[in-house]
Length: 194
Image (tube, rainbow, N blue to C red):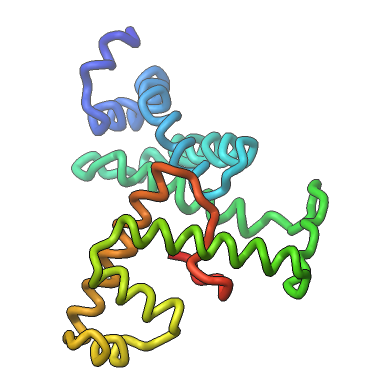
C-alpha cells in the first residue's frame, strides 16, 4: 500500500490525509523529515532541538491537515509550520535552562583582543583574494573605515546605487565561499557579520 503512494504528488497525499489515510501522511513524513530537520538545524545548531522541532512540525501538520489547501504547494505550507515551530521553540527556551551558562568573554582581555585582530586579518586576506577591486574596496570602506554609502560613492566615484550593488555582490560572494569552508569570523573587531 505504501508503495502506491510513492508516485503521488505531495498535494494528492495531503488530500488522502485529509480523508483520514494515515499511510498517506506517513509518506509525507518520509519525504520531508530529513529536509525539515536540516532546515531547523541550520537555525538552532543543536540536534536535540532540531529533532524536537521536526517532530512538533509534523504533529502540527497532522492536526492542521484539514486546513491545507491542496491547490497550493504542500512543501511551502509544511516549511512555514517548521519555521513557526522553530521560532516558538527558541522563544520558549530560557537561557541557561539545562545548560551551563556561557562563559563571559572579557573584551579587554589582551588575548581576546589579539585573537579578534588575527581573525579580522585572516578574513580580510581571504576577501582580498576572492573579490574584484571595486567590491573589496567598497567592503573595506564600509566595514573597516565605517563609511556610509554616500561617502563610499564619493571615494570610488560611483553612484550610491552602484556602491550598494558592489556591497551586495561582495557579501554574497563571501557568504557563498564561507559556506563551503566553515568560518565563525567577523569582518572586524566591531563584530560586523556578513
